[in-house]
Image 1 (spheres, rainbow, N blue to C red):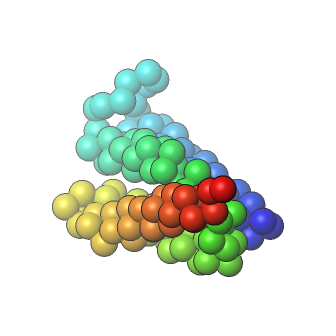
Image 2 (image 1 turned 120 degrees about the horizontal axis):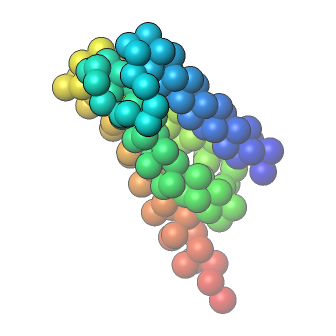
Image 3 (image 1 turned 180 degrees about the horizontal axis):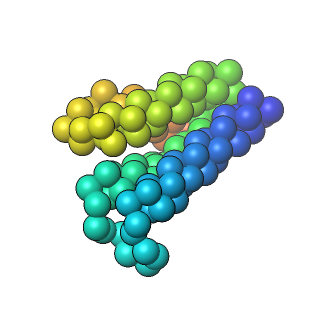
Length: 127
């Protein structure tokens, strides 16, 4: 389970990174807390961070269920795809929200593979 722990911690560090980008954009564009609007680039960073939080709610349980019932090596590999997908999503969304498609796919598809694989694995092993 060490590989899944590493992927989990990397996912959390990625979330912290996106949060730091929001904080930097808040300072750069003089967006005073608690405001979440006021500059389009700030709002894009904010949305990337928030969307990553939303995705983590699917990714983390799916990762652990898949790793437990199917295998940690497969779970970790799919997890790496997810992490790279989030980085692509973040970069492309800030650049131009319309270009986020490939990053979205490389984030959402791994989540669904993990969730469905974990579910199937649990059902198959149910007594």
